[in-house]
Image (cartoon, rainbow, N blue to C red):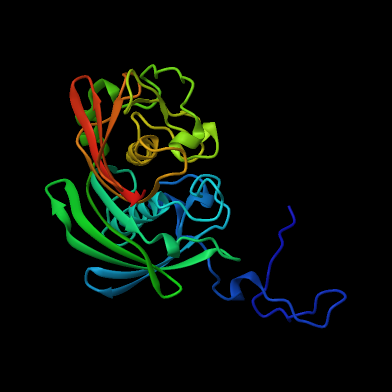
Length: 318
């Protein structure tokens, strides 16, 4: 077998047809790239929104990120703005990254999301001529181990071009796979449950969406009620196999239900405050009820088998 050896002292030669010298790959400058996808529980690099991290103090971090100009899901129906839920996903990724990369939570641990709150400034979400470069400050409170469970509270500010674009908090816990299996019982295996069939979704415009494929709600039995019924093959909401509806699906359901209480295009969500109380199972109807509390403020409650699964308050411009 003939082996190719690259010598570190080999001369730097110009590329054919140019006068510029080429650079060996091990001498190339450090360029912008995403953080490892495994640290934010994504399988596709296109869905990783963080690009770097520096430690400012013991529990405060400066991260960088980027939102693409034309994301297939996190874009407003008219294509002019980033969706505010993208801020929530960025906060979620920041928490996961810090847990794994800084605080030593093993990659195989499961995350229990208890709350996710975020608010955005719509004028800072407008899509420009290039990707949106983000400067993110994350403050970690009570991050640490209690027995075999890691938990904490995260506060995040997202700046774009020096302006505050969004801010929010998250409360969570991380458990070992064995603990997760005990919590989930027979339902703790992706693909074991027989999921509900996909029904015809509500019109995309009424849910604040452009495409029916992105709608996670089907009509309910009365006004203000819907059935949680996303497409389980959705490449963003179900980016990897799950044994339950992910938290971000419930956040999106709350967002769409708030839009559904208004005429199409009459409500623009800006923030959501969500608590997750139970797992939303794939094989049992989960009903989503929305109530208008005041102009620009909607309460959304999801319930399944007589139990409250999540509660969310959606705010925006009506």
